[in-house]
Image (tube, rainbow, N blue to C red; front, side, top):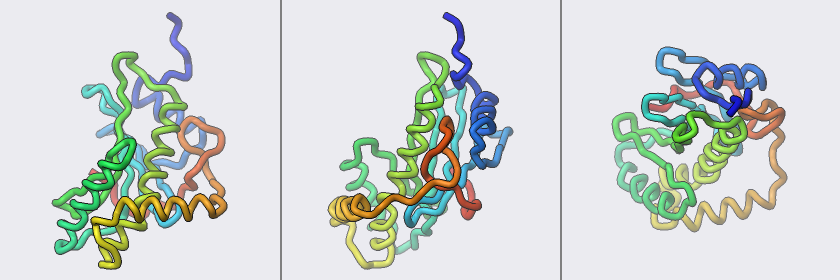
Length: 193
């Protein structure tokens, strides 16, 4: 079987795709990660793509740049558990050490040994959209304006309201596309871990 030139088979081919498509990013070759600034709705963060060949996966980690105060950790744990149960692709995560939130997904490299640009693009968009959808509710819980028990209903309400609002236009493409959302912004947060 001849190898399709669009197959992303390595970290180097991921970088080549990002360069070809003009995606603003920071390359961290030592740990085989790239950081892509993201902005959508209230979300203004960083999406980290980590090429993990030894593990056979590509990880997508979207930061939700809102610190979680120590006294709000139990509420945030409860909200995340409720939301992950309701999401088609659960992936919300609370890093207790740094009191930070991320949305994380993984694309398998195996059994094919590669991913396609449209798969990268879909995962990129999914991570940014999901993080953007849940962020307003999580911020309200942190501020004490809402309770974790209401997290799913509030995200659903916010998404319904957002669907009635015209979408923002994108200023740069997602990986693997000529035009896409979200619109990149200047990096504002450290890379998620």
